[in-house]
Structures are given as C-alpha cells and as structure tokens.
Amino acid sequence: MSDIPKTLRFIALLDQVLTWVSLVFGGLTLVFMTGFSVWNVLIMRKALNSPIVGAEDLLILSLVVIVALSIPLGARTGAHIEIEVLETSMSARFAKWSMIVVKILCIGLLTIMAWRLWHAGGTAAKFGETTQQLLISFGPFYKLLAISAGTYAVVVVLDVWQLMRSGKVTRLKVGGDGL
Amino acid sequence: MMSMTLLGILGLLSLFVLLALRMPVALSMLGVGLVGTVVANANKFIAVGMASDQAWARGLKIAYSNLAGETFEAASNFNLLVIPMFVLMGTLAGVSGMSNDLFTAAYRWMGHLRGGLASATIAACAGFAALSGSSLASAVTMGRVALPEMKRYKYSDSLATGSVAAGGTLGFLIPPSGGMIIYAVLTEQSIGRLFMAGVFPGIILTLLFIGAIYLVVLRNPEAGPRGERSAWPERKEALLRAAPILAVVGLTIGGMYTGFFTPVEASSVGAFFTFVVAAWRRSLSFQAIRAVILQTMNATATVFMIIIGAFVFIPFMSITEVPADLVTLLTSLPIGDYGVLLIIIAVYIFLGMFLESMAMLVLTIPVVIPIAIGLDWDLIWFGIIVVIVLEMGMISPPVGINVFIVKSIAPDVPMGKIFRGIWPFWFAMALMIVLLILFPGIALFLPETLVGG
Image 1 (cartoon, rainbow over the protein chains, first blue to last red):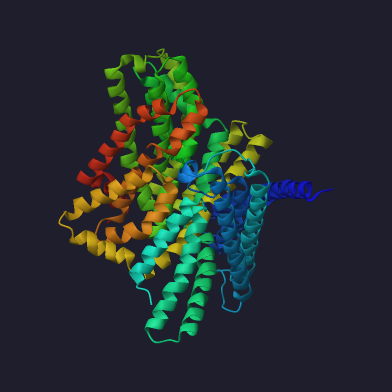
Image 2: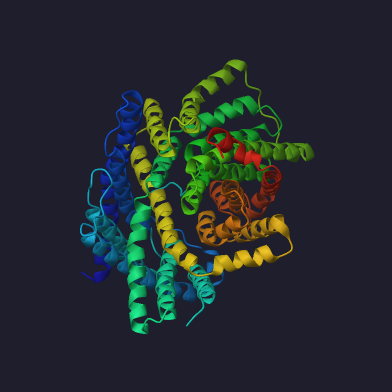
C-alpha cells in the first residue's frame, strides 16, 4: 500500500483521537470545573461558610488541563486565528509555497515551545513551582502543555503534507463559532 | 549594536510580514516575542560591557525561560477561568434553542411596530449577548432565527441582514464579553469593573440600534413592514418561556454586580444554571452535548493561544522603547488629549477594516495602553471605547466578520446590499463613542458606584 493513504489514515485517526480525548477528558474537566466551583461557592462558602481548602489550586490546574487539551483540537479545526486579507491578491503558487514556509516556521517554533515546556516541567520541583495551598507540583502540568504544543506541531506537519499533496488543508469540523 | 527603538520597529514590521503571510496571530506574536527578547537582552548585556558570546547566551536563556514561564502563566491564570465557563454558558444557550425563546418574546412585544422585527432581533441579540460573550455566536444564532422571519414579512434585505450583523456585535460589548476579558487580563484591569462599565453603553447602544432602525423605516416604510399584533396572553406566554433564560442572566450578572459572586464564580454559576435550564428543556441530546464540549474547547483554544502569544510578545515590546517613544511623540503634538484619542480611534477603525477584532486587540494593546497611561486616561473607560471601535470593525467593509457570517446564512443577498444595510448601525456606534467621550460617566458610573473609584 502506498504512503499516501497511510498518512490520510493517520490524519483520520488523529482526528478521532483528538475528538474523543476532547469529549471524554475535556468534557470531564469542564464538568469538574463547573460542578466543583458551584459546590464550593454556593454550598461550602455561601451556605456553610466553610470554603474548600485549595479549591482555587484545583481549578487552576483544571484550567491548564482544558487549555492543553484544547490547543491541538483547535489546530485541527482551524481555531487559531489567521489574517487572510492578502490571500486574494496572491498568486496561487505564491500562496501555497509561502504557506508551506510559514508552516515550517510554525513547526520550529512549536517544537522549541514543547521542548522548553518539557524542560521547565522537569525543573519545576527543583525551583519549588507548586500551587499555593495544596503544594501540588506544576511539573506534570508543564509537561502536559509540552505534549499539547508538540501535538500542535504534528498537526502542522500534517498540514504541510496536505498542502504539498493537494494545495489545501482539510480541517476537522466541530461546528460553532469562535469568540 | 542596535537601538531599542529600531529593534522594536523591526519587531513590529516582522510581525506584520508574518501576519500577512497568514501565520497564525498567536504564533506570529510568539515568534517575534521570542526572537526579539533574545536580541533585546543580548544588546542590553553587550551595552554594559559583557562579551558578545556570553551576552547572546544569556539573552537566549532569558527568552527560553520567558517562553515556558509566560505560556504557563497564561494557561494557569485564575482570572481566565471565566473564558471556558462563559463560552460553555453561551454554547449551552445556543444548542438548547434558548435563542428562539428570546427572539419570540421580543417579537411578540415589538413585532407589530414598523421595523419591529428588526428591533426584536436587536433586543434578542442583546439578551443573548448577556449569555454568550461572543459576537459571532450572537450573529449566527440570531441570524438563523430572525432572518427567515424578516424575509417572510418582506423586510428589505439590507435592513434584515444589517440588523443581524450589527446586533451580533453587541456580544462583544454586553457582559460577559470575551473581548473585555482579554483586555482586562492584558492591561491588568479588573474583569468585574470592565463588565460593569459595559452595561450602560450596552443598553444605550441597543437603543441607538433600535433608533437607527426607526430612522430607516421612517425614510423608507417598505423596508420594515409591520408584523401581526400579538394578543396579550401570547405576549405573556412568550415572556414566561424566556423567563428562565432571563433569570440565569439576572443571577449571573446581578450576582457579580452586587458583589455576591466574583466574575470567576459568576461564570461557573452561570454555566451551571444554563446547563440546568437546558436539561430541564430536554434539549441536551448526545449530539448537543458533543457540540457543546467541542465548541467550548474550540473557542478556548482560540483565546488561550492568542493570549499565550500576547504574553510572550508584550514583555518584548516593553523592553523596546517604541511605546514610550510613541507616547512622547503623541503628547508633543499640539492636538490635546482629544486629538490623540481621535487618532487612536481612527487607526482602530482603519485596522478594523482588515484585521479580526480579537487579533487587533492583542496586537495593539502593547502600543496603545502606554499612551493611555501616559495621558492619564481611565483604562476602564478606554477599554469600553476600544471594545466599541472593535465592534465597528466587525461590520466594516471589506472584511467585517459578522457580515460574512450573515452572508453564510443568507447566501442569496449580495455583499454590497449587506454592507449598505450596516451603515445606520455603524453610525450609531460612532455616536456611542462620541457620547462616551463627552460623558465618561456612562461607562464609569456603575463601577464607581458599586465598587468605588
């Protein structure tokens, strides 16, 4: 079997993984953030005057998780804003090759970002980077963001492949609108 | 060795080149911020006599440390928790059909007036804006509901599409507003105070939009014929159906303004009760839940990636002397504060013709805010002006994003006709800015009264 269908199958698989990871883990995180925050505010703090210790810590870490899960999904859906004003005045050839060059730059940038975040995750414990109340180390969460940036880089590599093959990038559709 | 001002200008030029080549805004800012930080710091160390290779190594180390640190700082910013929560609230409201109830209520009460359907669209957009914080979501959701109705009653295409496109922009001004949250975080202002400051301008702008519709139908009665007059029981029933949504808005926004909730708490409570209302209406099928989660994460990705880019870019801009030089230049001009403000507004209006509003916000803040601080402007008041000018960009030709959204819902209406329809609303926004400049209290009264100066 040729390499082309394999890559296309990989993109389809990546889409499925991103969608299901977002639905399951993203969904659970959103439920936790909403439910826990409401429980802490309405019941524990307002009704019982006994706020949960470290609630803010857990919400902050949940936010990091939801951001880390969202970024690669957004990369596949085209959520990251681009300015397309000049596209119509470019020749098709220039538009394609400039896009490929720009995407290669993005891959380099995201790789550096992933590397530095992973490195920061490794040294977080050494520098005492923890949450304020529960003293949970930020290390694993730096690494989660590193994986997120790395996955974004993989998505852009696949974009380059799609551009070289067909001149356009097919996006994952989730419906809805940005902010 | 390069001067800091020159470095800053080169940084801005590189940014524009990357943006023009369609590099994502977030990554453009991240890249320029990273490289700029290396060069700026290396230059500084060389200037104090450090050996060149050591200076570059030190510059690189600082830039790497900034990259990881600022990324984590943005992703773990407690105040930004409001973004996924308010987006969740808006998507829940969108998929569960609450927008239909809002529109029906507004329509039953206003539909019999000349131009009443368009006014009902504006009112429903304002109501939906208080749930969603997104102008695109408001335009899409209300467009799908209102445009077919306006077509049925033979409204002119330009008034129908113009009112949806303009009404949608209220999502950016009426709290909770995504634009305000980003402005607040990047300028270190209170999200709660900004939300409060947006209330009266939001209400007044809604009324100005309705006034613009009145003027259009006064000139051309054919543009907005009267609809059927609803009987009182129908009006009451429609209002009752919309009551749960209005109650969620009241609880969330009211709780925040009375100090019962912080903005972060209000966002979670709002999302929770919107979920309860959606579940009670039995509108949460598996497909709907899937759409809610994925759309929430999609919007979260957009906002956070751009904030991460801004967090890396802004420190670089601060190291360069471009913002300070610009402050010196503008304050030395014999045009006074109002003159400087008008220049800034004109630049925003110009940029708004080509740039997406959120991108424009993060790109301009590093340069514009030092000017506002230098001239001792209230950053809350200035934030409201910026948000309204950004709204104007959303409906300005040639790339007003809301116009394209409306075009996607009404593909048979030519773009020229849609743009003709937005002008009355564009001037209403301009009038709102004039009012804010003449009477800053419109924005500042509520935060100063409820929270203090």
